[in-house]
Length: 82
Image 1 (cartoon, helix red, strand yellow):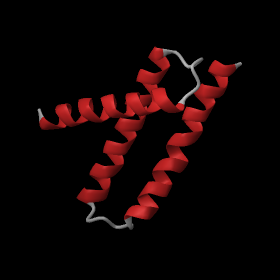
Image 2: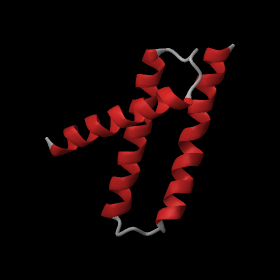
Image 3: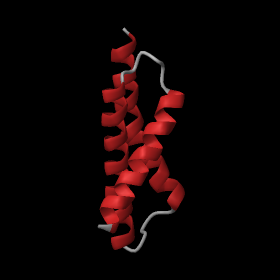
Image 4: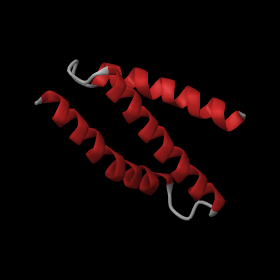
């Protein structure tokens, strides 16, 4: 139950941030899908990281997360803008 509430709150926060950052042409459903991807990937990496006694520094985990997630977001934005 706590995990579901955390996922919901994070998703809402990411959706709000995306709406302020993405072009207006990106429709609402795309924002919801992107937020679900971002939160799911973040939580999966966070779980792996903590269960494995944090084998990498937070900065490295952040870099991996951004390298994995940002290209997908950029691709959706590029498709919606054309």
